[in-house]
Image 1: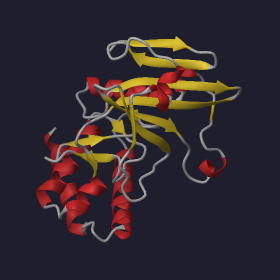
Image 2: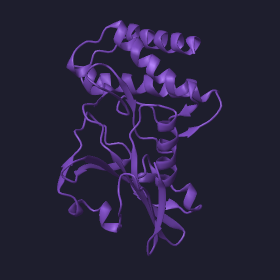
Image 3: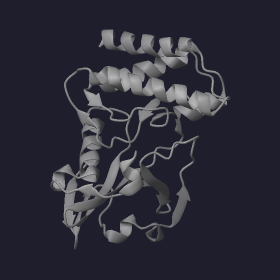
Image 4: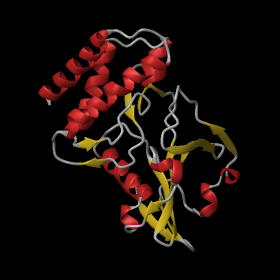
Amino acid sequence: MTEAVEKTGNGAILYDTDLLDHVSERTFSASAWKTVKPVESALRSGGRGYTIIVGDGKREFVLRHFRRGGLVGRVIRDSYVWRGEDLTRSFSEWRLLRKMLRLGLPVPQPVVARYCRRGPFYSADLIMLRIQGIKPLSMRLAELRRDAGYWQSVGAGIARFHRAGVNHADLNAYNVQLEEDGKLWLLDFDKGRIEAAGAWQQRNLGRLHRSLQKVRKLDPRIYFTPDDWEALLEGYFQASRSA
């Protein structure tokens, strides 16, 4: 991956020259692409970003516009306080994804990131290569009941990220995604970081547990029990001990 930054009238674009030889502001417009389609949603999985799938006829990409969540997001939809180019949400996530790929972790490949500055505020966008064949854990659980081995594999997959020091800021049943054969991927690393082991690991797991309990209440097709969670923890701690 070769990093390049191109300045724009009100910001900058960061991109991988091995994947794209030219970028512009239009790169972040749906009208610039040959194909555009929505992301298949699951329950209330809108998240903090506005996301679509775009294509150039050969490859598909995920284009995400950063949006705020929570109570603040009801008032300020997509503006963030300017603290410098390297600290923008889009550039930070682009570079974090790049670091994780170098560590061999299963995450999307970043392609282009942008910020647009307006005085003391900015907005941000990120484009990644689409990973084919993955679905959120919430959707996989709605397909059929999963056995203990499946849950142990999910736990081991999360432990792999934790061993590398990856603190996912919003680990939930939507950002944990799996292929048909059970291979785990993690998505959406907004505000994520790499750091030394600590209490954040338990907080990550607690966040995922609450998310799974929530989706179970939202959709009666989803089978999730205390035994399933115990199997996930078993896989997590076994993988952590064997590292």
